[in-house]
Length: 415
Image (cartoon, rainbow, N blue to C red; front, top):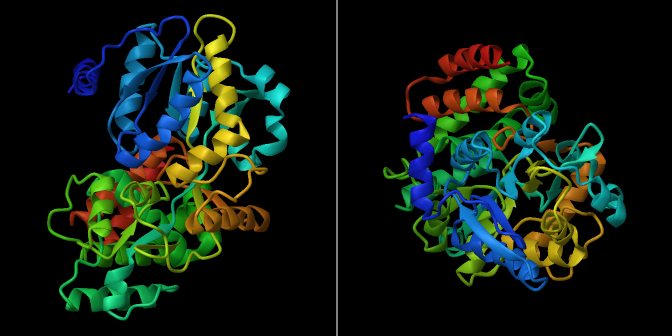
């Protein structure tokens, strides 16, 4: 399918035309379309509306943002860029290198962003010393979500090691319970693989393989072990996983149709939206073997150059995003943690407070890593090459040894 055809189809699916925002409005392209995500985004809409700024919504479904980036490329090529776009990691830097993003330095200096946004986030929010996006949150991706009742009924404690996890999964399967809820999309499989690789090899291995792209790490026995563990996961999902959206997999855990889901902390918004409480109906814990590590991504809104200085509406949007009150209100609903370090955890639930504590500890100990699966470890070309191999293996096209060889070749070609 051509870029133009794909874009037309995606725009038709949103029910919106690709039109420019009127003066006093912000047109926002994003992929937050699930119930929990929409509820969180509404916090930002209401904040802007209270300032008399209208919101022209342009949602493009697709949890990893790939569809949204296709629409964006077509809009920019046509000379009709949105006001602001949700983006991740290296995608932000790629657009900055093209000179497409507005300079937010003035608003950043006035509000002291340099002092409160962690350096790991600034690496993706600044280019050539200029702020070019406003971080909304920090998501950590190596979480497991569990249905507490199913675990209690089967006498299962929270697993902290891979062996404890496999024992729990096998016990659930023997009891006729679907152990793992999963959605068969490439980015979801990569999210699981992220955590599995960290668990199998530890932080030094993760850095060597996915950040440094070291061939010896990519082709190692440790990587083969990671693929073996993925094969174990594949053997304990239900038959209808292919093409399932991540939030529908979360719903399986919410409804007691499956025990575990490996997914980033945006999943928590779905539990909260369903009226559930952490520690009562559901549990949250780090993927077994990654208790001290945090792999992260950070949603940011990049402001696109509208042909001159940053517009008043863009400045208001950026300021609203980084305000402490919004950072708390939004992230309480979204399931993520604030993108600034001076926000109180008073309004957060148990999972949120744990996430904030884990992030601070990992940052100070050198255990905070950009997520490969979510574009914060390597550029998109490399990420997509890894996606292809991981998904092919998960769907039975490769055994683990073949997957390792294919991974080495794919990354080398994508560099």
